Length: 164
Image 1 (cartoon, rainbow, N blue to C red):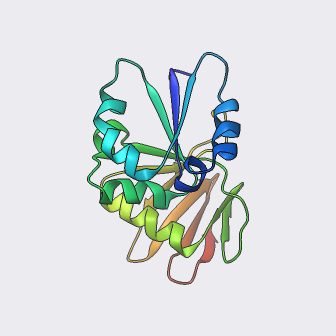
Image 2 (image 1 turned 120 degrees about the horizontal axis):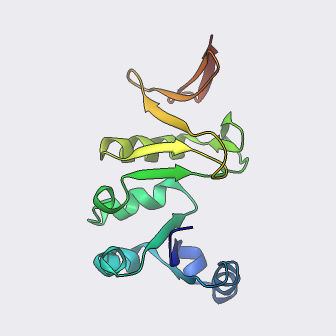
Image 3 (image 1 turned 180 degrees about the vertical axis):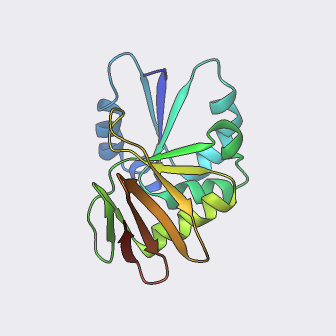
C-alpha cells in the first residue's frame, strides 16, 4: 500500500467513540487512521490532499463522496478514480456483480460522481479484475464485462440484463 494513512469518512462512526476506536484499531500497523464526518473532511480537504503524507480516503457509501463534492471539495483533482469495494446485500439493492449490491440511491450517487468526472470501478481486492461502471444511454449503465458478456443495469428500475 502506497498510503501512509487512511481517512474514513462517516458521520455516524465519527460521532460514536466506540465505532471510531474500532475503525482506527483496524488500520494496519504503521499507518495513521482518522475517522471524520463529511463536514470536517470538507473543511480540512486542502490539508489532507496537500500533506506530505499520502492518505487513502474511504467511505461506506457513494453518497458520502457526493456530499463532499456538494460541499465544494474537488475530489477529481486528488482522486479521479473511485474503487468500489464490497457492497453488502441490503434491502432494495440489486446484485450487479460479485460482492456488489447497489440501491437506487447508490446509482444516483454514482451518476452524480460520473457527471463530475469521476471514473468508477468495482474491484473487491487488489488482485481481482476491475469492472468499470460505464455510462450508456439515458439511465443504463454498463456494470461489468466478462469474456464475451456485458451486463447492464437499468437505473430507474434496478433491472439488470446481460448480453453475450
